Length: 339
Image 1: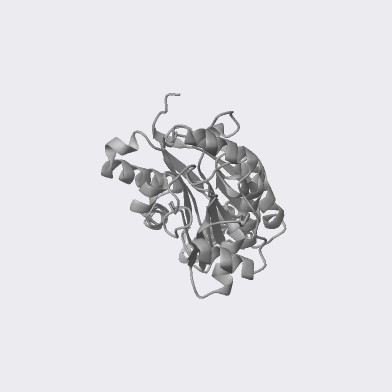
Image 2 (image 1 turned 45 degrees about the vertical axis):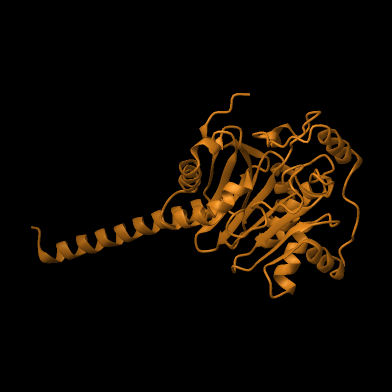
Protein backbone atom coordinates (compact mmCIF):
# COMPACT_ATOMS: atom_id res chain seq x y z
CA UNK A 1 0.00 0.00 0.00
CA UNK A 2 1.34 3.41 -0.97
CA UNK A 3 1.53 5.23 2.37
CA UNK A 4 2.93 8.55 3.51
CA UNK A 5 6.25 7.03 4.67
CA UNK A 6 6.93 5.49 1.26
CA UNK A 7 6.02 8.74 -0.42
CA UNK A 8 8.53 10.65 1.71
CA UNK A 9 11.27 8.09 0.99
CA UNK A 10 10.63 8.18 -2.75
CA UNK A 11 10.42 11.96 -2.77
CA UNK A 12 13.66 12.25 -0.83
CA UNK A 13 15.39 9.81 -3.13
CA UNK A 14 14.08 11.67 -6.16
CA UNK A 15 15.28 14.99 -4.81
CA UNK A 16 18.70 13.52 -4.10
CA UNK A 17 18.89 12.05 -7.61
CA UNK A 18 17.88 15.39 -9.12
CA UNK A 19 20.50 17.19 -7.04
CA UNK A 20 23.16 14.72 -8.15
CA UNK A 21 22.05 15.12 -11.76
CA UNK A 22 22.24 18.91 -11.52
CA UNK A 23 25.64 18.63 -9.91
CA UNK A 24 26.87 16.33 -12.66
CA UNK A 25 25.59 18.67 -15.36
CA UNK A 26 27.15 21.69 -13.67
CA UNK A 27 30.43 19.83 -13.25
CA UNK A 28 30.31 18.82 -16.90
CA UNK A 29 29.76 22.42 -17.99
CA UNK A 30 32.58 23.67 -15.80
CA UNK A 31 34.94 21.02 -17.10
CA UNK A 32 33.90 21.76 -20.66
CA UNK A 33 34.66 25.44 -20.24
CA UNK A 34 37.89 24.98 -18.33
CA UNK A 35 39.15 22.52 -20.93
CA UNK A 36 39.30 25.40 -23.44
CA UNK A 37 41.52 27.46 -21.17
CA UNK A 38 44.10 28.80 -21.48
CA UNK A 39 43.58 30.02 -25.04
CA UNK A 40 45.13 32.67 -27.24
CA UNK A 41 43.83 33.99 -30.57
CA UNK A 42 45.26 36.52 -33.01
CA UNK A 43 44.60 38.09 -36.39
CA UNK A 44 45.94 36.71 -39.68
CA UNK A 45 48.08 33.71 -40.48
CA UNK A 46 51.21 35.30 -39.04
CA UNK A 47 49.42 35.00 -35.72
CA UNK A 48 50.49 31.35 -35.55
CA UNK A 49 54.12 31.90 -34.47
CA UNK A 50 52.96 34.73 -32.23
CA UNK A 51 50.44 32.44 -30.53
CA UNK A 52 53.04 29.72 -30.06
CA UNK A 53 55.30 32.20 -28.27
CA UNK A 54 52.40 33.34 -26.07
CA UNK A 55 51.63 29.71 -25.28
CA UNK A 56 55.07 29.27 -23.72
CA UNK A 57 53.75 31.47 -20.92
CA UNK A 58 50.09 30.44 -20.90
CA UNK A 59 50.89 26.72 -20.97
CA UNK A 60 52.87 27.07 -17.74
CA UNK A 61 50.07 28.88 -15.93
CA UNK A 62 51.44 32.35 -16.65
CA UNK A 63 49.55 35.61 -16.84
CA UNK A 64 47.70 36.56 -20.02
CA UNK A 65 49.28 40.02 -20.03
CA UNK A 66 52.80 38.58 -20.20
CA UNK A 67 51.68 36.16 -22.89
CA UNK A 68 50.21 38.74 -25.27
CA UNK A 69 53.22 41.02 -24.96
CA UNK A 70 55.63 38.17 -25.69
CA UNK A 71 53.43 36.89 -28.50
CA UNK A 72 53.14 40.04 -30.58
CA UNK A 73 56.86 40.76 -30.21
CA UNK A 74 57.42 37.89 -32.66
CA UNK A 75 55.90 39.65 -35.71
CA UNK A 76 57.33 42.96 -34.47
CA UNK A 77 60.79 41.41 -34.88
CA UNK A 78 60.08 39.56 -38.14
CA UNK A 79 62.20 41.11 -40.88
CA UNK A 80 59.92 39.63 -43.55
CA UNK A 81 56.75 41.17 -42.10
CA UNK A 82 56.15 44.62 -43.57
CA UNK A 83 52.90 45.21 -41.69
CA UNK A 84 54.15 45.11 -38.11
CA UNK A 85 57.22 46.31 -36.25
CA UNK A 86 60.79 47.02 -37.25
CA UNK A 87 60.49 45.93 -40.91
CA UNK A 88 57.29 47.88 -41.49
CA UNK A 89 56.97 49.97 -44.61
CA UNK A 90 57.45 53.71 -44.05
CA UNK A 91 55.10 56.63 -44.51
CA UNK A 92 55.28 58.71 -47.68
CA UNK A 93 58.13 60.77 -46.20
CA UNK A 94 60.23 57.70 -45.45
CA UNK A 95 59.62 57.52 -41.71
CA UNK A 96 58.85 54.13 -40.10
CA UNK A 97 56.30 55.01 -37.42
CA UNK A 98 54.83 52.34 -35.18
CA UNK A 99 51.66 52.09 -33.07
CA UNK A 100 50.72 49.69 -30.26
CA UNK A 101 48.51 49.26 -27.23
CA UNK A 102 48.04 46.74 -24.44
CA UNK A 103 45.28 46.14 -21.86
CA UNK A 104 45.10 43.88 -18.81
CA UNK A 105 42.43 42.16 -16.74
CA UNK A 106 42.10 45.13 -14.37
CA UNK A 107 41.27 47.62 -17.10
CA UNK A 108 44.75 49.11 -17.06
CA UNK A 109 46.01 50.11 -20.49
CA UNK A 110 48.93 51.74 -22.23
CA UNK A 111 49.55 52.96 -25.74
CA UNK A 112 52.09 54.57 -28.06
CA UNK A 113 51.41 56.13 -31.45
CA UNK A 114 53.68 57.30 -34.25
CA UNK A 115 56.75 56.21 -32.28
CA UNK A 116 60.03 56.02 -34.23
CA UNK A 117 63.36 54.23 -33.78
CA UNK A 118 62.03 51.63 -31.31
CA UNK A 119 61.65 48.03 -32.52
CA UNK A 120 59.13 46.84 -29.91
CA UNK A 121 56.41 49.44 -29.40
CA UNK A 122 54.24 46.93 -27.50
CA UNK A 123 56.75 46.85 -24.65
CA UNK A 124 56.86 50.65 -24.58
CA UNK A 125 53.05 50.64 -24.41
CA UNK A 126 53.25 48.35 -21.39
CA UNK A 127 55.78 50.68 -19.77
CA UNK A 128 53.39 53.60 -20.32
CA UNK A 129 50.68 51.56 -18.58
CA UNK A 130 52.80 50.51 -15.63
CA UNK A 131 55.21 53.42 -15.11
CA UNK A 132 53.23 56.57 -15.93
CA UNK A 133 49.87 58.05 -14.91
CA UNK A 134 48.97 58.28 -18.62
CA UNK A 135 47.42 55.99 -21.21
CA UNK A 136 48.98 57.23 -24.45
CA UNK A 137 52.26 58.82 -25.51
CA UNK A 138 52.87 59.88 -29.12
CA UNK A 139 55.61 60.83 -31.55
CA UNK A 140 58.85 62.27 -30.21
CA UNK A 141 57.56 62.14 -26.65
CA UNK A 142 56.95 58.41 -26.93
CA UNK A 143 60.43 57.85 -28.34
CA UNK A 144 62.00 59.98 -25.60
CA UNK A 145 60.16 58.02 -22.91
CA UNK A 146 61.25 54.72 -24.46
CA UNK A 147 64.91 55.73 -24.47
CA UNK A 148 64.65 56.92 -20.85
CA UNK A 149 63.26 53.49 -19.97
CA UNK A 150 66.27 51.78 -21.53
CA UNK A 151 64.89 50.81 -24.93
CA UNK A 152 67.45 50.79 -27.73
CA UNK A 153 67.11 53.54 -30.32
CA UNK A 154 67.88 52.27 -33.81
CA UNK A 155 67.22 52.92 -37.47
CA UNK A 156 64.19 50.89 -38.57
CA UNK A 157 64.02 51.59 -42.31
CA UNK A 158 65.39 48.40 -43.85
CA UNK A 159 66.96 48.26 -47.34
CA UNK A 160 63.97 46.24 -48.56
CA UNK A 161 61.46 48.72 -47.17
CA UNK A 162 63.45 51.66 -48.53
CA UNK A 163 63.46 50.08 -51.98
CA UNK A 164 59.68 49.58 -51.90
CA UNK A 165 59.20 53.19 -50.76
CA UNK A 166 61.37 54.59 -53.56
CA UNK A 167 59.49 52.50 -56.07
CA UNK A 168 56.21 53.85 -54.71
CA UNK A 169 57.47 57.43 -55.04
CA UNK A 170 57.60 57.04 -58.83
CA UNK A 171 53.81 57.27 -58.99
CA UNK A 172 52.95 58.17 -55.38
CA UNK A 173 49.47 56.74 -55.73
CA UNK A 174 47.88 55.66 -52.47
CA UNK A 175 45.18 53.03 -52.37
CA UNK A 176 45.10 50.26 -49.74
CA UNK A 177 44.60 46.83 -51.27
CA UNK A 178 42.09 44.49 -49.65
CA UNK A 179 43.72 41.63 -47.75
CA UNK A 180 47.23 42.48 -48.89
CA UNK A 181 48.18 41.05 -45.49
CA UNK A 182 47.81 37.59 -46.99
CA UNK A 183 50.16 38.50 -49.85
CA UNK A 184 52.97 39.91 -47.75
CA UNK A 185 55.61 37.63 -49.25
CA UNK A 186 54.65 38.32 -52.86
CA UNK A 187 57.17 40.41 -54.82
CA UNK A 188 56.08 43.96 -55.51
CA UNK A 189 53.41 44.21 -52.80
CA UNK A 190 53.33 47.99 -52.59
CA UNK A 191 50.52 48.64 -50.18
CA UNK A 192 51.17 46.04 -47.56
CA UNK A 193 49.67 47.16 -44.29
CA UNK A 194 48.03 45.90 -41.21
CA UNK A 195 48.02 44.72 -37.68
CA UNK A 196 48.37 41.85 -35.31
CA UNK A 197 45.76 41.90 -32.59
CA UNK A 198 46.01 39.23 -29.89
CA UNK A 199 43.63 38.19 -27.12
CA UNK A 200 44.35 35.65 -24.40
CA UNK A 201 42.70 34.03 -21.41
CA UNK A 202 45.02 32.44 -18.88
CA UNK A 203 44.47 29.44 -16.61
CA UNK A 204 42.92 31.69 -13.96
CA UNK A 205 40.33 32.92 -16.44
CA UNK A 206 41.77 36.42 -16.75
CA UNK A 207 41.93 38.26 -20.06
CA UNK A 208 44.45 40.58 -21.66
CA UNK A 209 45.03 41.89 -25.16
CA UNK A 210 47.68 43.51 -27.33
CA UNK A 211 47.67 45.21 -30.72
CA UNK A 212 50.66 46.42 -32.73
CA UNK A 213 51.27 47.69 -36.27
CA UNK A 214 53.43 49.78 -38.56
CA UNK A 215 50.24 51.23 -39.99
CA UNK A 216 49.32 51.68 -43.60
CA UNK A 217 52.32 51.80 -45.90
CA UNK A 218 53.07 55.22 -47.43
CA UNK A 219 50.49 56.95 -45.22
CA UNK A 220 50.62 60.69 -44.50
CA UNK A 221 53.32 61.44 -41.95
CA UNK A 222 51.64 61.53 -38.55
CA UNK A 223 48.68 59.37 -39.52
CA UNK A 224 47.49 57.07 -36.74
CA UNK A 225 44.95 54.31 -37.22
CA UNK A 226 42.87 52.33 -34.75
CA UNK A 227 45.60 49.99 -33.48
CA UNK A 228 46.87 52.09 -30.54
CA UNK A 229 43.45 53.44 -29.59
CA UNK A 230 41.78 51.73 -26.65
CA UNK A 231 38.19 50.95 -27.61
CA UNK A 232 38.94 51.02 -31.33
CA UNK A 233 41.77 48.59 -32.13
CA UNK A 234 41.56 46.78 -28.80
CA UNK A 235 39.30 46.49 -25.78
CA UNK A 236 39.23 44.07 -22.85
CA UNK A 237 36.64 43.72 -20.08
CA UNK A 238 37.50 40.89 -17.72
CA UNK A 239 33.82 40.33 -16.87
CA UNK A 240 32.79 39.91 -20.50
CA UNK A 241 35.60 39.30 -22.99
CA UNK A 242 37.87 41.09 -25.40
CA UNK A 243 37.97 42.23 -29.02
CA UNK A 244 40.48 43.49 -31.54
CA UNK A 245 40.32 44.69 -35.13
CA UNK A 246 42.17 44.69 -38.42
CA UNK A 247 41.88 46.56 -41.70
CA UNK A 248 41.25 50.23 -42.43
CA UNK A 249 41.55 51.85 -39.03
CA UNK A 250 39.66 55.03 -39.84
CA UNK A 251 36.38 53.12 -40.08
CA UNK A 252 37.09 51.22 -36.86
CA UNK A 253 37.75 54.49 -35.01
CA UNK A 254 34.54 56.05 -36.30
CA UNK A 255 32.56 53.17 -34.82
CA UNK A 256 34.66 52.55 -31.67
CA UNK A 257 34.69 49.00 -33.01
CA UNK A 258 36.31 46.82 -30.36
CA UNK A 259 34.42 48.45 -27.51
CA UNK A 260 31.21 47.94 -29.48
CA UNK A 261 31.95 44.22 -29.93
CA UNK A 262 32.56 43.74 -26.20
CA UNK A 263 29.38 45.60 -25.27
CA UNK A 264 27.37 43.47 -27.69
CA UNK A 265 28.80 40.35 -26.02
CA UNK A 266 27.77 41.84 -22.68
CA UNK A 267 24.22 41.98 -24.02
CA UNK A 268 24.33 38.25 -24.77
CA UNK A 269 25.67 37.98 -28.31
CA UNK A 270 28.24 35.32 -29.17
CA UNK A 271 31.68 36.58 -30.26
CA UNK A 272 30.88 35.91 -33.91
CA UNK A 273 27.46 37.59 -33.70
CA UNK A 274 28.99 40.63 -32.03
CA UNK A 275 31.71 40.93 -34.67
CA UNK A 276 29.15 40.64 -37.45
CA UNK A 277 26.99 43.38 -35.96
CA UNK A 278 30.01 45.69 -35.67
CA UNK A 279 30.87 45.06 -39.33
CA UNK A 280 27.29 45.76 -40.36
CA UNK A 281 27.36 49.08 -38.50
CA UNK A 282 30.30 50.17 -40.65
CA UNK A 283 28.56 49.11 -43.85
CA UNK A 284 25.32 50.83 -42.86
CA UNK A 285 27.05 54.15 -42.23
CA UNK A 286 29.19 54.09 -45.39
CA UNK A 287 27.82 51.47 -47.79
CA UNK A 288 29.78 52.65 -50.83
CA UNK A 289 33.10 53.00 -48.99
CA UNK A 290 32.69 49.60 -47.38
CA UNK A 291 32.61 47.82 -50.74
CA UNK A 292 36.23 48.77 -51.39
CA UNK A 293 37.84 48.28 -47.98
CA UNK A 294 38.47 45.56 -45.45
CA UNK A 295 37.69 45.66 -41.74
CA UNK A 296 37.59 42.57 -39.59
CA UNK A 297 36.88 41.98 -35.91
CA UNK A 298 38.08 39.14 -33.71
CA UNK A 299 36.63 38.47 -30.26
CA UNK A 300 36.68 36.08 -27.33
CA UNK A 301 34.29 35.85 -24.40
CA UNK A 302 34.88 34.95 -20.77
CA UNK A 303 34.13 31.27 -21.47
CA UNK A 304 36.91 31.06 -24.04
CA UNK A 305 34.50 31.00 -27.00
CA UNK A 306 35.83 32.96 -29.97
CA UNK A 307 34.64 34.23 -33.33
CA UNK A 308 35.30 36.73 -36.09
CA UNK A 309 33.63 38.57 -38.94
CA UNK A 310 34.85 40.84 -41.73
CA UNK A 311 33.50 43.06 -44.47
CA UNK A 312 35.33 41.13 -47.19
CA UNK A 313 36.29 37.48 -47.45
CA UNK A 314 39.93 36.55 -46.95
CA UNK A 315 40.33 37.46 -43.29
CA UNK A 316 41.79 34.66 -41.18
CA UNK A 317 42.74 34.24 -37.55
CA UNK A 318 44.95 31.90 -35.56
CA UNK A 319 43.97 29.91 -32.46
CA UNK A 320 46.20 28.20 -29.91
CA UNK A 321 45.23 26.03 -26.93
CA UNK A 322 46.33 22.81 -25.25
CA UNK A 323 44.91 20.70 -28.08
CA UNK A 324 46.36 22.55 -31.08
CA UNK A 325 48.87 25.34 -31.38
CA UNK A 326 48.72 26.19 -35.09
CA UNK A 327 45.04 26.32 -35.96
CA UNK A 328 44.06 28.82 -38.67
CA UNK A 329 40.39 29.64 -39.20
CA UNK A 330 38.85 31.51 -42.11
CA UNK A 331 36.64 34.29 -40.83
CA UNK A 332 33.14 34.79 -42.21
CA UNK A 333 32.32 37.91 -44.21
CA UNK A 334 29.56 40.02 -45.68
CA UNK A 335 31.07 40.31 -49.15
CA UNK A 336 33.30 38.05 -51.25
CA UNK A 337 36.50 39.45 -52.69
CA UNK A 338 37.01 38.66 -56.35
CA UNK A 339 40.75 38.35 -56.83
